[in-house]
View 1 (tube, rainbow, N blue to C red):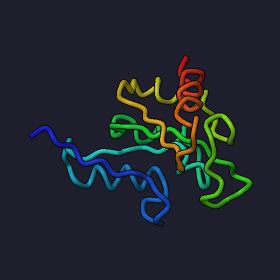
View 2 (view 1 turned 120 degrees about the horizontal axis):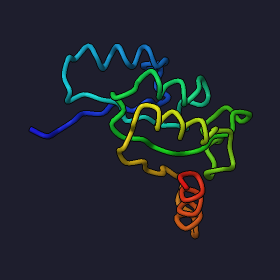
View 3 (view 1 turned 90 degrees about the vertical axis):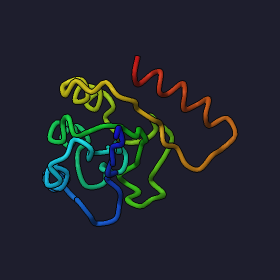
Length: 127
């Protein structure tokens, strides 16, 4: 009835590879199950562009955030364009699967001026 359940890749030791997530989503045999792909969450253990190419049309929505791999913990999440995400590769991969859905900046915690800084970074990334 127009409802899609999207599974996000998070740090919970579930669906640790794009092949696992692809297989899990496909096991439902339903167009009502997809992926809410988070670019920053995958960076510690993989390559966002590889996940995007493998998940392909299963990706229904995208979270954009950045991460510093050298930190290696949740403290490594940082402002957009200040971490290690290769946003050019992410954009190319999203284009390659003809993704035309929403991308949402997921930035935590809130800081004064943060939304404006994030908006500028998103414009730079997706120019």
